[in-house]
Image (cartoon, rainbow, N blue to C red):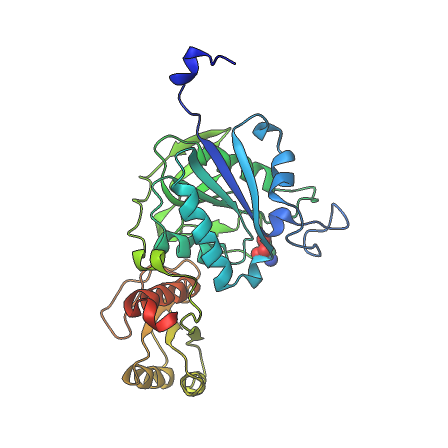
Length: 327
Ligand code: ASP
């Protein structure tokens, strides 16, 4: 059949890839009134798309990458997601990617992707605080907003959209356990707002980070660096750190009080860890973060949550040792 001559000049309409990974957004409860006793991670990405009228007819490709409650996310899941995104971003026909995910560890996945991917197209994470069966289901609107953002000209970087607010992946933090409006960018404030299908940009999109290029040539690490978070609190001691050192921990994050203060008993044990070659990072346990670095030891991460600081230290260890140590 003769091809239409105008086909040759018609620009490719980039498609949005939707990667399903589970979470409450894909969850089902026995009743529309039940917002806590539901089963997470049951609906597929294709089913989530089919439930949103505003997505029908758009150039979308929905793929179920894995299906998990994000409280159970593993390093292997993170690896799989990074690989899928790396390949998706390299596709000329993909304009942006949406990842549906659970809310519990969304800030960690977002930080992992920010730290390890060169996202020169938008990679938009979204989630929901209510299962798909709920009277208050927030997933359909969040998914619609995520696709809108992934199709936004000029947007780039690892982003998250929830409850009408767009956060940079490295600034995202879950600050509420139950309320629908559960996420914050702490001191920085949102990057943009989603209003009636329009993106109102407030700050510049994050520049695509220098990805950890060393990971590109690696198979999934056979052994990931073992990094734990220890908390500073009233009555703290060094015993947990001593036990972790005996068990062979590779790195430690201290979730410090206030502006990065650490109980003296715990601090002594952390110094011992450093002397034994185990690196230590310091983050604040304050929910809205924003630590001002006082230059004290251990080195501080300014705006990361302790869970994100743990990902940061895993990345530093993977990057500094290179593939040899973890293969
Ligand atoms: N436990 C769920 C998850 O993280 C919670 C949620 O998605 O809101 O997968």
